[in-house]
Amino acid sequence: MAEDKIDASADDRRHDPRFVVNLPAHVTIRGDRVLCKLVDISLHGALVETNGPVHVGDKVSLDLPNIGPTIATVLRITPTHMAMVFPGAVVISSLIPSD
Image (cartoon, rainbow, N blue to C red; front, side, top):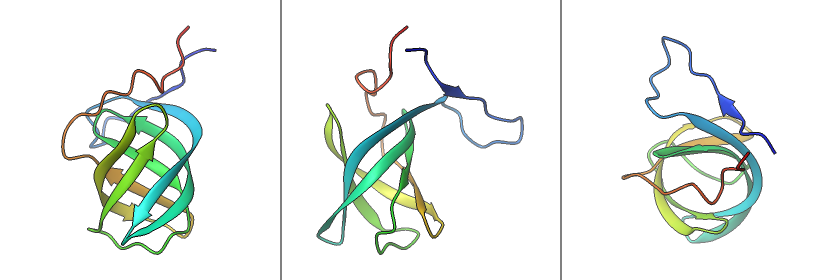
């Protein structure tokens, strides 16, 4: 399976490449564990598809497949997605398909 990397535009604030993963995961929001889909991930953040009750600035725990839980801060929300940032780098090599 080929590596799916999302290209960042010149005005994009991201510094790390994002990788499309589309994997099931769980996010814990204020003590409630919610099923979500991990859409894409980078060393310092992720985008998940979920309709869990969350607000910008909330601390959540994202349970990453093959990695385990990691704390994140919600940066942006839409009715169906949540973008989050990790406080430090997360080793994501086990989530990225190899060529």
